[in-house]
Image (cartoon, rainbow, N blue to C red; front, side, top):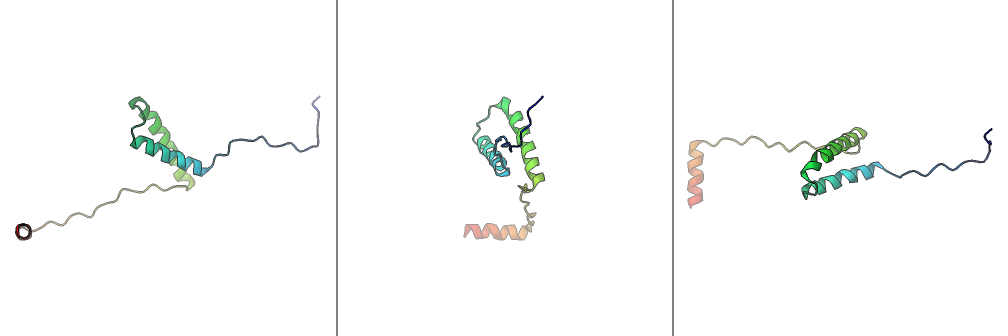
Length: 91
């Protein structure tokens, strides 16, 4: 029969991993990818992990992914404005 004790047991010490550590991991992957640290055959594995990590961080509210900045459509110049612009450049 197992021995029963009334003394409190210490909880096992586990890794102290935080959301901040996961954000840092995503930043490390970004920096490494920018410096071409990964071999071509590793890119899919790293990219798949990065996508899962970012999805988790977004769902936890730790990060928000920014949409690419959208540029306002350039206004079309009239032929007269184009001619005036060329004349100003020559002057």
